[in-house]
Length: 415
Image (cartoon, rainbow, N blue to C red; front, side, top):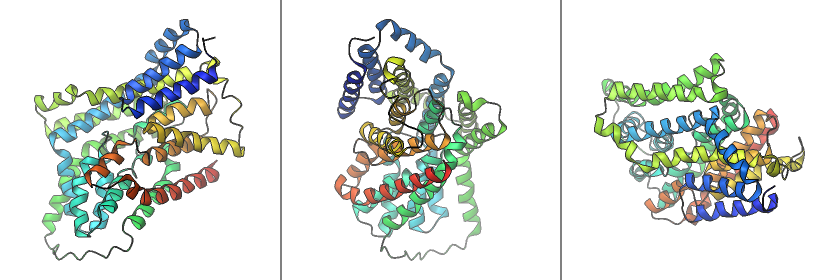
């Protein structure tokens, strides 16, 4: 046994985690430091090198780390090559309804999981929102909410990948249960975001068919690397080669997407190497490793026994825990992956996890993260549109509650 009682060790470690996040310490450093502190407090020290080694050579861990690095590299190359600008411009040229554009643009740019990436869509949202005379707080809400509507069903979402590998549930089974939730998110966002906003009268005549075709072609070319990555991921899962069990489906798909981007857009060596010089790409990759290290520490017998009696199958208490714990951790950490990484070993340990349980844990952590004041997209959006978090919360909280109720309904229907 370690030097400190496991229950006290967990409380100290979680307090340490919250303190580091409050101080804006990088999530990668935070998760790894928390895992090591918990291990030092609760385990025999001779076991710590074994856990670190087993985590490092674990195939799912390696796959998630590689997938994380690849996704971040793809995102950075989209930004550095200017493809993201072409993608957003083509969408704006194809869709002439500002309300639809404001719903689609943040979501499409949200396919690139860059930390604080709401800043990438904020200027575009600001420009389109002026056509509807939206107030700053409404602009901020639209930018924040619609950016995060796509992630619950996005197979390249790092939190989904992490959830799938930690719970052993295939990505498509998690996504299937999130589709109704995403539909509600979109509907709620559209109603609250554009409530009592008059319809925009577009005086521009769309009579040039060749121009529309040209914009659509530009969109397909710019979207091609992301689309190829998504298609390959889903196809490999459907083929049933067992690649998804080790996370290799996403790794292979990312390589395909990167190859297509390089072939189509031919970035110079200077542009290609630029992401490798950024700490951000390594910080997020390190966070992926930290999520698995923390998970492996928490499922150690000395620690996991603290939670063994918490969840009873199908009981009301389990529903409360399956939602409250991930949501609270997502809110505190400002990271859905972090919320999932801590929640799964607490709530499930090494036991079999049903798809509905995995989906509920994920969406709870994700929604908690979405409304977290530690969420970079939230703070950056508020700063860009020069409005307080409180003014955005009056739109976000009702959206959160309605979406959360839909997540619970889906859980009970599909359990």
